[in-house]
Every structure is written in C-alpha cells, then in structure tokens.
Amino acid sequence: MNKNDQMVNYGVAIRHAFEYLLENYPEVFVIGQGLWSPWYVGNTMTNLDIKFGASRVIDTPVSESACTGAAVGASLCGMRPIVVHPRIDFMLYAMDSIVNQAAKWSHMIGGQAHPGVTIRGIINRGGEQGAQHSQALHSWFAHIAGLSVVMPYSVQDARDLLIASVLCNDPVMFIDDRWLYDNEATLDPVTEIDIRDEGPKVIKSGSDITIVGCGFSTDLALKTAAILLENGTSAEVIDLRVLNPFDAEAIIRSVEKTGVLAVIDGGWKNCGIAGEVISSVVEKISPLKLKKSPLRITLPHCPAPTAGNLEKIYYPTVKTILPQVKKLLD
Image (tube, rainbow, N blue to C red; front, top):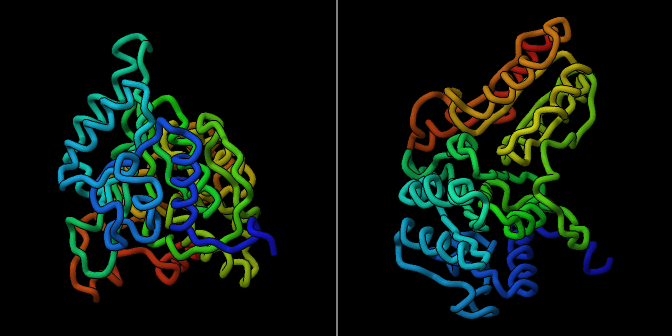
C-alpha cells in the first residue's frame, strides 16, 4: 500500500487541506480561537501552528466578530484567509461581517474587489451540550445571496471542497460536522477543482426511492439505504455537497426515475434545506411522476435538549428514519 492508498479519517482530511493550502499559497492564513486545541477543532488542525508558525495560524481571543472582520478585511487586500469558528452557534456574533460585508462587497462596487474569505463553521451536537452548543444553522447561510455554502459528507470532499473554497475568489462558508470526523476512506492525490462546477452528486444508485442528505445526514441516508437493500428496496442516495448556489437537476433526474423522494436534514423543518430541496423538485417535475408526497425527516421544532435520554429521541437515527421511509414506500 503506497502513501496515497492509506486510510485517513474525515478530520485528518481537513488537516491535509490546510497543509496543502499553507504550503502552496503564501497568501493563505488561518485565524480563529482554539486552533491548537482538540477540544475546539478535533484532529483537523493538529500541530499546524507548530509547523507553519503563529503568523500563518493565528490563535485569537474569544471574539468571533473581531477575527471574522479581520479576515474579511485581509481578503480585500489580496489575502486568502480561513476564519475558523469551532462552534457554528457562536459564529452568529459575526453575522454583520459575513452577511453585510463579505457577501455584499463585490456586488456593491461592481465586482472591483472580491473578498475571497473562507468561513469555516463546525457543527457540534450530542454529549449533553445543550441548546446553545448543538445547532446546525446551514439553512440560515444558504439563504444569503453572494455567499456560497458547502457542506461535505465524504472524506474526499472534506479535503477537496475546503481547498476549492479557499481558492475561490468570492466568500465561501465551509461547514463540517464533528459526527463525521471518524469516518475513514482513502484519498486520491489532490486535484484542484472549481467550486462553481460542484453540486449535488449521486453517491449510490437506486431505482425505488431517492434519499437526499447533506453532511452527517448523508451518512444516515447511506446506512438507511443499505438496510432497505437487504429487504429488496433499491434506494438512490444523493449528497447535496453545495447548498448555495443550489442546483436541483441531479435530484430532479433521480426523482423522475424513482417517483419517491425523502430528504433527511440535521436542521429544523421550518424554512429548512429539506423544504428547499422538495420545493425545487416539485416546481419542475410533473405531478404524474410522483408516486407519493415527498417526505421531510428533520429535527423536532424545538431547541436541543441537554439530558442524554432526551437527546436519544431528538436527533434522527437510522432506527427512527427507517419506519418513516418504509411507510412512504407502502
């Protein structure tokens, strides 16, 4: 087995992306809080501060607004900063810099400047962390015109979409989920891709039902599909990958074939990604192609609980998803 055939996990793949960018692009730097700490960023940034120094990997005080504003400003001066928010929940302190500055700047001055900043938000859930530390807010940011949003599921995408995000000349939000950090796969050699060419992808072919997910929800979709196959049902699984701009064509083609659509999302149902996927499909597809009304599988519409016994019934699992999908197929 050569080096490129070795199994790496999702977290290490993200670290490989940081290493590639910092080694090959001197205009890249990383800024944020707790960048050296596994408690904050898991194994995604281990020893980067030692390898590249404090001028390239800048650990800041706890001020989400300040470090994000500094990153946006640096991007307007030709740098390619990556600002890291170890908890996407508290990235809300930086909303003005992200939504009113980074996402708007190029459009306000006729494209004469491009804030090529990458904002990394990490989803943390479970472990009795409670309502303020357990949110998946990807649908918020996917709503913002001028801000690309990527949410990788696969180990390969964790590396390659981060590289593509940083090399994009416009602002990109890169959202990763700590529940994926232990997933393992082999990595192909780095090939730089253009994020504008990326979108939803069929990662398992099937003929009886289309199941769509993003991030950790794609993991649930694949595991659900595997059990369905044991019972004779062939599920096609689509990983969204890029939430904004959103291209529904791959999903539309799949649903035209299967006639049945289920969307799994780790966010809430109201105004969420699951609803956006379904509406984008039903706007384009003939009603005669749909055998059943589409299904949304999301969080209950309430803040996350702290108690462990309540967490077990709050978050969707394969065990809770399967009966809903089987009912849809009846």
